[in-house]
Amino acid sequence: MRIKITSDSTCDLSPALLAQHAIDLVPLAVAMGGQDYHDGVDITPADIYAHVAQGGDLPVTAAVNAAHYEEVFARYANEYDAVIHINISADFSSCHQNAVLAAQQFSNVHVVDSRNLSTGHGLVVLAAAELAEAGMDAAKIADKLREMTSRVEASFILDQLQYLKKGGRCSSVAALGANLLKLKPCIQVREGKMTVGKKYRGAFDQCLERYIEDHLSGREDLDLGRIFVTHSGVEDHTLKTALATVHRLQPFREVLVTTAGCTISSHCGPGTIGVLFVRKD
Image 1 (cartoon, helix red, strand yellow):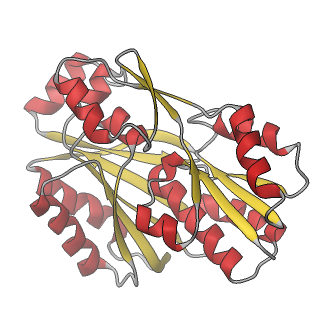
Image 2 (cartoon, rainbow, N blue to C red):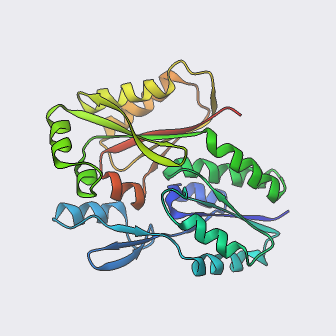
């Protein structure tokens, strides 16, 4: 059975991983500075950071509309036996709703809500590709992915709150207090929604190490096949701290480093890093 895997651009998988598994992305729209762009196509996180640093407002991301999804599905529905499309969580965007609407025009298109974002979403996309490569039936893959989504753990720790403040997700007073106290909040995804978790205090690399310890240390319920370390631009020593801590705590067979795309970058800003993985079935 020939199955095509597609995903929203929000999955933050590297070009190498996308090419390896022949995964195609559908870019979300990004409006910034009076111009419209396409996530990962003609705008990058570096463009966003430069715009904000010069005093510009945060960009606004917009869902892919049903007509565009229908065009994408039509491109592959005749060429392949089936198409499986994985969306960013329906609680973050109307992408999933629009994709489901578009898929009604095709008998062989399956749409799955990842219930996640960034490489939490990407872990589901990779699982879809690997199951398809193993020869599993498309409907069974879709069912397996929907079960998997509840076992994905995604979180990030933030070095600064400027973007959350500009986006109205954190008051100026709270941001000032966090900066004075050197607090580094953890943002986590729970049941498809983003929430604030534990707040760490101190130098960022030390906070990062404690954050990873809290998520990985002593756990026996982890699928040790793969973990992502995803960041929106951090210093080399910070990335090395994250990788060393992961390797010290758990024997993951594959530790993948990726850069966050425009969605995470526009909400959390630079200096954000997280670990994203799956619990055992």
